[in-house]
Length: 179
Image (cartoon, rainbow, N blue to C red):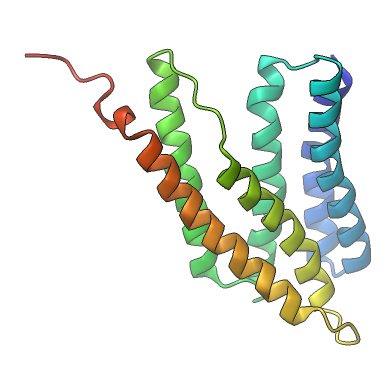
């Protein structure tokens, strides 16, 4: 297994440790683990592209690892009232729609790559989470900045979801049998 795929797996393995640390109130450790795990996302992509180590495993598991990391954090934050439940519902609904469309397209032999709006959404989410963790520390004045990034990520979630549906609307007619 190549290094980028190992980094992807390491990111997935980090998730339950992050969840336990955050839920037990070890926010500094959770913050550091989340930042390191997020950094592996950037690193695995750079290494894979630079050394031509792009694999089907990486194409599927890298974005999945990102989603597991970020959405696990958001679920924990809903539990503590840091993120509103309705925000998470919008975020997850977009992911289910996009994943469903990708599954239908794949069943027809079509691969749909992520676009820039989706990548921006992910980056904003990966910035929002650690800022939201820091925002729970009363002596740091980052709560407003954290909320700005949370809202920006929510807006990009909606924009990227709409963009994805519009660009790939032909997926809704895939698999229909002619009568």
